[in-house]
Image (cartoon, rainbow, N blue to C red; front, side, top):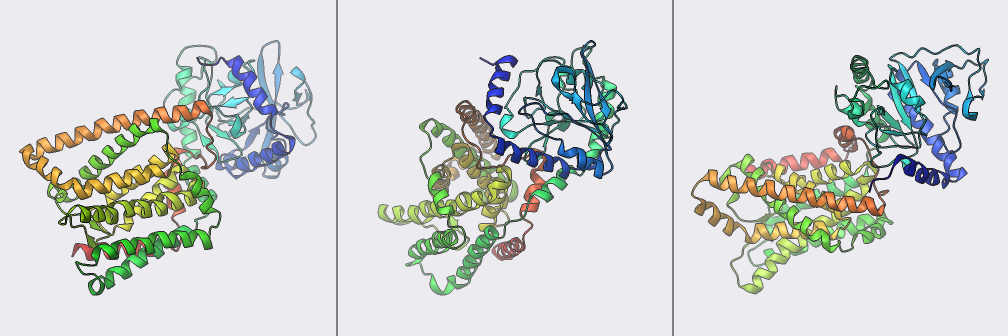
Length: 540
């Protein structure tokens, strides 16, 4: 049963009271710095601030900074008779004094502030949610003021005080963005271009006029035009070591490819494939952890745990999505005939299932088990960990990109990228490194043993249209199943309050820019050059 606003207020007041004074000082400083770094602050000519109540974010240091930057500052004064609030400019000659409800207010002689589209209103609250909904103290002063406010409304709160979803009423007006000690969060009302917030759909005295909202959204789009790119660029320092690890692996694979004609024979191919993976992936990954990231092995050990039994159906659906989706992408890039063929490892070793049962087991070990273990150690183990501080989306995108480049194939690049994304998503969903290892193993075994069944199904279908219809239907069906299971998994995490501090949350719209800047490293370019050269050679 959902909690009422009053019940939430009691719970959140207890949560806020648990923040120690020292922690609060650090959080306040980080929130102020986050505001000062934003383009929203730089574009504003007036700041509407608030005098903090016990436990609220202290923004008073912004007064001196704003004046130094040539901006006006104003504070609210409440009219308890009319239940209205207005802001008054606070000049250097004025001082705040206790007013209504004991809250410090500007003196009576302070001039009235008339907000414009370039005014930034920083709103206090007990809590906000990602949609921008606000949980105040129940008086409604800010709701009535914001209904006619033409500028940018921004919530201010500590990250730990945010909740997933707040109950809303018809007069509640969502924020445009939220400032925390982390990066600013653009709210849904701003991201949904030109749409009226659901909470303002009915006609009340608090409702924001459609014409005013249209003007506000037009102005906001101008203000935020470069905000996403600027924030991503400012907050990311491209890591040097992870691309260096990938470059080393790529270089070793290229060297082996050059030596392959002189070293590999049909008799020793299987043994060399096993040795290659142990030396290039396992040994390189362990050496990377030992010499450059000594604490990484311990953190990886924590993720090498079994996933929960109820997540098994989710993994089965993900495997089906991975197989059908990669097949569809292969058809798009190489035609339906590209599905028929043998399994090759790094465009060097060819899996041959012509021997007996013992030989088949060795082939599965060399081309199924070892690639799953070794590649997941590097891409979903080390690389995910190295990049997840920039956000889960960046970690998923970058690790999948390097995984797709690893296979030195231009036609199969989209397919491998898709597989890499799903493997990374399974890691975050289950929080277990064993999950992507098993998915990778299942995918490899299908490629090794399922090609003959696939060819038989294609032949018996009688037409390309029937085959594609079955493939697309299976892909959509299992995608829906996987999405439903993922929702259940994350719902359970939310109920249990599972820790998510291993990765930093960032707005979705920043993802392309953050991936770009996270890859802006000198060691990434040689990786791409090596892949391009080898991919072109493999096409010849």
